[in-house]
View 1: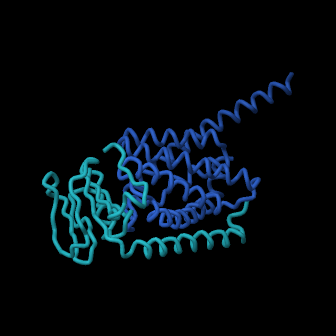
View 2: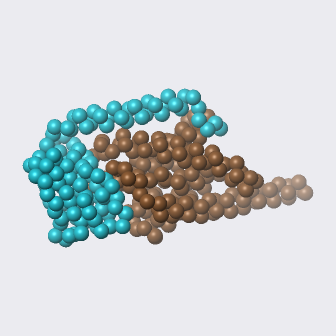
View 3: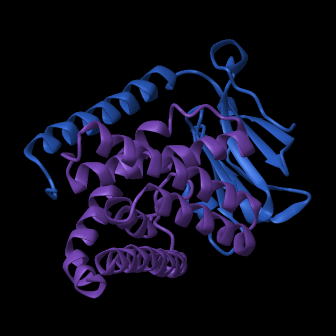
Length: 129
Length: 179
């Protein structure tokens, strides 16, 4: 068994190219669609934020004061601070594209971006809600 | 009679060898996973991406021991994760592990053993990511996967190449130990 074959490089190149193109297409298609951010606590929808309102603010859920969100004027939202040990939520960075999400599992907080017309164009559903 | 007897002993010793080796590999898989858990998380904008170093062990098992042993290690490892890190982490481990072994076996089977280490490893890594992601989106958000799918594929290519490379490097040493 060989470590790598010449044809592998072609397959890898095609896979990478297809992935990059689909990221580009998805980003372009959803770029101008207005989006909401939804914040869930233990799978319960706590807040829905219109990201197109263009305000810059920090806030947190009453139940989780240590988890601070940062909404920016240019329509992104991120986990700014959290008391969890792994900081996966903060590493997820600023979200603005429908489908993106960040989760702070130790705190049970999930932040996800949804398109305003989500019901019409995607089979989204929240299971166990 | 004599010949038969030694054949029996050979078969038994081969079985014992496989059994012991499977147990050892399971132990190594757990230790590697624990060690990886101690490393700082990779700062990438995709939730929970890891190199998946214990996939090296699973790959070795798929290549040199067999499907049964590989599934066994993967299920036991998921149980270990379930006990130590909770139900969700356990479900993630199980989904990723089982799907990646299945896909690697399919790749090996379809190519009639001609697929390279790198290609097998990459397909395993990609399917591992996708298996985990399906579980994440089922349990947590029900979000659409379209944004993350290509990122997971790219991550799978990179981590798959990395784990195949490491396996290639340590393989001679492992073979010396095993034989």
